Image 1 (cartoon, rainbow, N blue to C red):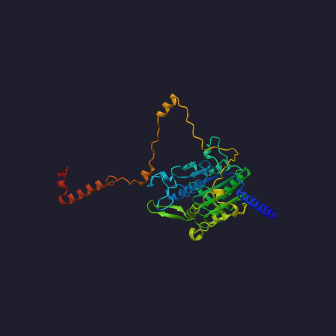
Image 2 (image 1 turned 30 degrees about the vertical axis):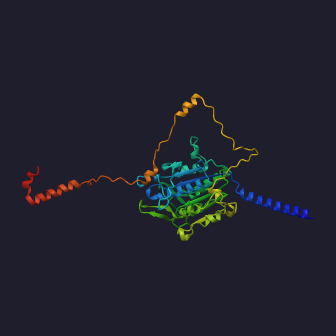
Image 3 (image 1 turned 90 degrees about the vertical axis):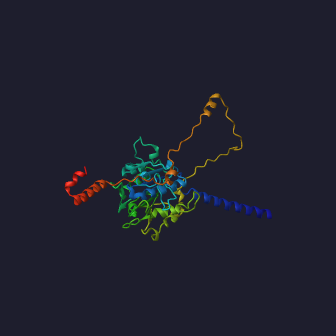
Length: 383
C-alpha cells in the first residue's frame, strides 16, 4: 500500500513538473522569432544637434550589449559629431555631463553617414528595394521570423520627421513602408520608437499587424533636451532617451522585464512631455513580450548526443624548415590612434599674435599724436 502511495505521489510530481516545463517552454518560444534586427537612425545634422547623435549611439551601445551583433544593426548617422572640429575631445561622443561614458567607443560601425541618410535610403532599407551593388552591411536582411527594433530621433512636427533639415518623411509614408514590410514577410514583430517633438503623430496612421509603437511626446507637445554641457555649449541627450537608457542599463539577456515595464519609462514628471504608446495592432499581450524580444538577440543552440572530450592535449604540429622560417618573422600592430592620450591631453598653448588691424591702428595713433605735438612740418624726421 505504501509503495502504491509512493508511486502515485511520484507520478503526480512528474506530471506537475512536465506541465511547468511545458509552460516555461511555451513562454520561451511565445514570440515565435528566430533572429533580431535593429535600425537606428539619427536624422539631424549640425553641432547644435549633438544630442540626437548621442541618443542613437546610446541605443546602439545598449542593443549590442544585449546581444544584437553589428551584422544585424543598420546604423544611420546624419552627422559625425566625433570628428567635428568643435568637439574638444575628438573621436568621442558623450551622453553624460561627467563624460565617463564614451558612447562612440572603439568599435562603432556606421552604415549610412552624412548625406547618405535620406528619406529614400531609409525607406529602401526597410522595404529591401536596394541596388544589387549595395553591400550586406547596408541591408536589412530580415525575414518572417525577425523581430525588428526601429529607433528614430531628430526634429519633427505633427505628422512628419525632418531629415537633414532639407526633406521630411510623413506618417503616411512610414505606415505604407511598414505595410510593404509585412506583405513581403520582412518581420515577425516590430517595435517602433521615436524621440521627437509631437512623436505620437508618427504612429497614428499605422495599420500593419504585429506592430507596437512608442513616442516621447503627444501631438502638440515638444520633446525636451537633457544634460546641458557648458564646456561644449550643447545638450548631450534628450530626456526620453536618457531615461529609456537608464532603464535598459538594468536589463540583462536573461531579464524577465516586459513591454509594460517599458511603457512606464520617463513619466511626465521627468520628461515634461507626455510619452505615448500604441499596442492595438500588436497580436500578443504586451505583458508577455519581453524587453529582450526586441533589444536582445536569440541565442542559437545546437544539441548533440556526441561526447566531446575537452581534456585531450593539443597535438603539436609537425615542423618543417619553411614553417620555422615563417615563425621567425613576427608582426605587430601599431597604435594608429592613441585615443586615451587624445582624451586626456591638455590643449597646447598657442603663440600670441596681434589681431588684424592692430598694428595699423597703433601707427595711426602715433601719427596723430605726432601731428598734434609738432605739426606736419616735422613729418620728414620720421622717414
